[in-house]
Structure formats: structure tokens, C-alpha cells
Image 1: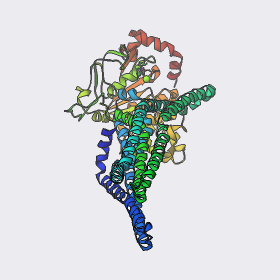
Image 2: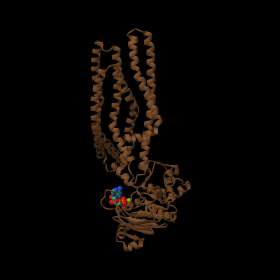
Image 3: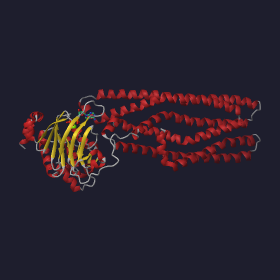
Image 4: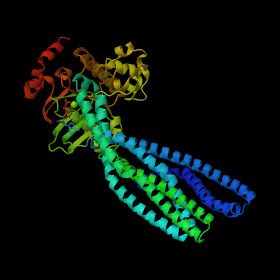
Length: 579
Ligand SMILES: Nc1ncnc2c1ncn2[C@@H]1O[C@H](COP(=O)(O)OP(=O)(O)OP(=O)(O)O)[C@@H](O)[C@H]1O
Ligand SMILES: [Mg+2]
């Protein structure tokens, strides 16, 4: 936790210096107050000197006011530092995750990354805001009060120290015990977030299968678990405050009892005892601040470790020190004995793939579900690293160039279309920020999406509700295709994004793509043979291996797997032919 704080707080030197200055002034003023009171009692009250009481009282009031102003100012600046610090942490977590490879992302999962950038950051915020002020105030007022108290009354101060030691021991023990509990608690919050996310995105499926009760029960269970763990963790620290109170009151009673005897025996004066008690109170309130800090500390330390884990994670895919520039790329893709297995899995998903996708040609990939098609295209974008062999673009190994350069060369329409809240125009321009409205219109026309967009109120500027919920599956796919088209990259990959289109639209989109991408490399992943039968090269993938490659008519003759796929689709294929 400390290292994370140092890393971030060093950018806020000036406001932190201001916090310290104000805290220092506040502490000095507060330390001065009891001795002023002692003076009033000794010189004013005891001797019936009313003018002295009044002038000194006015002074005391002024000093208190000054302390109050300093306190407000220090609170303001510490709040400023803390809020900036938390938002920086959130931004950095976001920034880091943005560059995660798919492997890195899978290692954490979306839910825990969400908790880490929200709840965990807030936990740290609580400690920092208290800590910043207490850091100086506590040692100064605490130690200052102790020294002043010592000067007033040695014996009673020793008593105070003993009670302080006992409390510290108990608090230390409780803190150590509660840390693992808080870690467990944050993990439970992760799980709750995960369930919540699944439920919100899958709400239609849950309703369709009438699984509301079951899902509610599952959520309740996780919620209860979280509740129980939170209770247990907080139970441990809940003893802090009452324990401190008890110790303080007990100490006070003993001090008063012994103190009154000392007064009776005229060892100390009444004024002296009262001043001493003021310092004891001040010392105890400093302890109160520490205990508030300690109560929040275990939880924040766990949170800090979780945030740090994300921030300090080494990317599993990194750019080489010297990158090869990708200029004047034609877009020729070469797979040279490429094998790949997901981390943790025992067998390879792709085995010894060899093929070339040429510019100006359409290369298609067909194969049963789960045969590795999406994995193959993810490898080209270097979302995962090949386990063996090499993927080359125009002869350059993709590991030798910067990931950003590589992805600039590639346009991609994923299998699951992803739309963001915003206008249609914004969504298409994700493909190419500089695309003019005409270019966007043209891309929409290629994707056969222009008609339904024009029917919407506001057309290009009509807003898409969250995730494209107000569009049909096929409409979403067409927008996703248009986004890839508008990029006009040397390599364009369509991952099974024609699946929700009817045959007629499917064939129109393909025709338009064929015309538009006459010089680029186009990769089309498809389940339906009808979608790719005109491709220049068809790769047949079966269980991660290429079992046939060639044109449609060649594969019909030579590739058994291709024949099988075709046979299973013969009805729909025949229908398409009549269009
Ligand atoms: N992130 C992952 N971690 C581990 N295994 C994975 C992961 N993604 C996919 N797999 C496995 O890799 C294999 C190939 O998956 P892939 O998504 O490439 O298939 P696909 O050919 O695209 O299938 P579909 O036609 O259904 O989209 C599957 O057996 C799948 O279980
Ligand atoms: Mg797939």
C-alpha cells in the first residue's frame, strides 16, 4: 500500500505541503490552549482577577478560531489530494487494461477489474483522506501532549503510557487477524459483480427460461456469503472503537482518582491537574484518529494490493525494443507452421497451420463450430501469441512490429457485434476517425445497412441505445461490417459476421465487398458454404488442423470434410443458388 501511495502522492507535493502547514498550525494552536487555560485558572480564577480572565479568554477564543480555520483548510486540501489521487488510479487501471492482451484479460476477468477500479480505489481513498491529516496531527499533538503532560505530572503520565501500550497491542493483534478476512470480502464482492453483470446482460435468456427464481437464489446466496464475510471482517475491527473508549474512560477514572489525592496532598495544584487532564484528552483524541485509521487500514491495504496487481502486471505480449515499420504493406498474410494452445489447456487448439492469404483475393475459413476459426483470426491481430511457428505480413513476423502498427493494418468485424452508446456515425467512425460522412454512407451501403439507418429518425445521427439493444441481430452485424469496411485497411477480417443475415442480404454484402476490396486481403470466416463458395481460397478447418485448401469446386472433389459440411447445408445452399 505504501509504495502505491508514494508513487501517486509524489505528484501532489504542493497541496500536500499545504495540508501539512495547516495541520501543523492547528496542532500548535491546540497545544497552546490548555496552558492558556491553566494560566486563567491560576492567575484569574484563583485570584478573582476578572479583567485577566476576560482578556485571556478573548485570546483563547482567537487561538481556537485560528485552529478551526486551519482544520477546515487542511481538510479541503486533503480532500483535493485524495480525490485527484483516486481518479488517477482509476484512469491508470483503465489505461493498463486497455493494453491487455486477451490472455492478460482472461487472467483477471471483467468483474474483478471493475471492482478493483471502483470499490478498491474507494477503500484506499478513505484511508488516504484520514491518513494525510492524521499523519502529522497525531504525532505532533500526541507526542506534544504527552511531553506537556509529562512536565505537569510524571506519575500520571506513566500510567497513561501503560494503558496506551495495552491498547496498541490489542489493536495490532486485531489488525493482523482481520486482513485475510477483508481480502476474502473483496473477492466476494468480485463474485457479486460477476453475477450482477451476467444477470444484467443475460436478463432476456433468464426470463425466457423462467429461471428468475433460480438466478435470484444464486444471487441471494452470493450476497449472503458476502454479507457474512463482511460481518465477520468488520466484527473484528468493530471492537476497536468501544475498546479504545473503555480504555480511555478507565484511564481517566484512575487519573482523576489519583490526581484528586495528589491535589489533596498538595503535590499538584488544582489548575495543574486540570491542565494535565486537558493534555490527556488531547492525547486520547489523537489516539482516536489513529484508531479510525487503523480500522480502515486492513481493508485499504488489501484493496491497494489488488489495484497494484493490475497496475504492475507485465503484459504477456510486448512490443520488441526495435520495431519494424509496416509501411507500404500489401497485406499478404503467411502462416508458417503455426500452432497454438490456450494457456492452461493441455492440447493445442490449432496445429501446424500453413497457408497464404493474398492481397486482392478473398480467403475463406470454414469449419465446424469450435474448430478454431476465431482463434486463428485472433492470432493474426496478435491478441494471443502463437505457441509455435510464425505469422508474417508481407514477410514481416508480426512479433517484430509494434502492436499498434499491426492493428492499424487490420480491419475487423468480430463474431459478436459490439456497439457502443452514441450515434450511428460515432459507431462507424470507430473504424476510422477521419472518415467523412460520405465515406460512412458508402460503408453502410456496402454493408447493406443504409436503408434501415435512413428509416431511423435522425439517420446517421440517430442514437444507438446501450449495446445496440434497439437493433436486431442482423442490423447490429451490418453496422459492425460497415465499421470494418470504412477503415479501408490492407487486411480486413470478417469473423462469421454474416450469420444473422438472410441469404439475399448475405449475397449482396459479399458482392459489394468483392467489388470494394479489389486490392486488399479479405478474410471471411463462415459457417455457411454459400457465403464463401466464390472465395479465391477456402481453408477447411477441422479440430484445429487445415484438412483442405483450394477453391470450391476443387474441395467438392477432394475434401471429405468439406463435402460433409456441404451435404449438411445442401438445402439452404440450393435455395441460395436461385437468388
Ligand atoms: N479464451 C479461451 N480459453 C480457452 N479455450 C478457448 C478460449 N476460446 C476458445 N477456446 C477453445 O478453443 C477452441 C476453438 O474456439 P474458437 O472460438 O476458435 O472456435 P470457432 O471455430 O471460432 O467456433 P465458432 O464457429 O463456434 O465461432 C474451442 O474448443 C474453445 O473451447
Ligand atoms: Mg468463432
